[in-house]
Length: 510
Image (cartoon, rainbow, N blue to C red; front, top):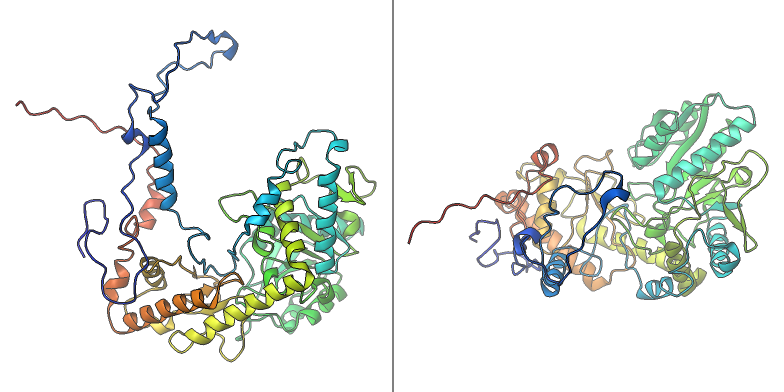
């Protein structure tokens, strides 16, 4: 295959599995390269503006924006959108991220008047329907988790973690236990767990994983002491496994006077099947974008409600909704506000729509299907790939390591880049850290058997090619994507953040 000077393919596809990557996407220039600053796509009158009211901050140079016609601007952004990979164009096998389909019904409901156009500062008397929806969503979340209270306002999972840990700190301060400054965090936890604990001023004490990828209750007991405030444990964990001793761990933590924070990022695997409150958790955040199909990624809009046990319910931050009424002031040692307003209304509407569409039995079926799909992938791939924890079924995600690539000259990163050439978004790489060269695959319940089979066929063909010694296919990948592989280290250290118009070279005389 030959390449043009933009690093784009110009020839035919290489041998191997049928590629679904496209080589027909245009090399899209910048807006400044399409238009020029001398013309505009619309007719605007000359305007004299008195800059006195700007306090000396008026512009002193030309704005230098490229002028384009409406078709030029529209086509530019449509072409850019075609360069994106999205859940609407293909499967996301991203482990621990639950990139599931967002049903269009959810979007339609979120755009209803009264939901889409309300403002956080308008009178409470004019948003009674929105408050009732929030109350209903809170009821579903508490019912699914068997907890006593929920704070809807956190803007993302890590924000929910912080709210839950702040509630734990408030409860211990109120009980005269402010000396508890240590948080236990298993090695297989999400990275935000130790970060949240450290951000709040706690010291982090690591709990090692067992050889089977789970947490040993005896290791937890050995780490417990009078200065331990809580344990932050992910269940199902980031190895894709359900913690078999979670109830015993919770009992040991409570007996030591500490609290049990559960990372709910993987709740999609157990919703409607297991109630975390029954396992002994005291606080757990729930990613609405993971479990309940609200939009995911891009920095927002996010929502990470945190549910609280009866012991922590009095310390829930305001505002919250109680019996359809907005409660903004309560007595006691609660947290006060953690956000200015009431959270992400659009995410609440989407999540509740998903819940009502499925019902309790449908949510349970979705969780079971997510587990089934992950185990199907594991069963199809485990003979060709290496499994770090053999002999046990996984939950929502299948975990592989890179030992099957030993001696091939192909790394986990190379393998993932080659997957791009075959039209699939890569799986999660190098996470969890307890597994060397990890490849974490989470298909979710959204994908059909036909899609899973296409993915597995490509994975198996790539594995066979790597073992056959065709390292060049992997180390040069991707070759069929809109851009070739970046020097990622150089790009991170020396990013080019501005664009300068190239100098016009003098033309030769005719």
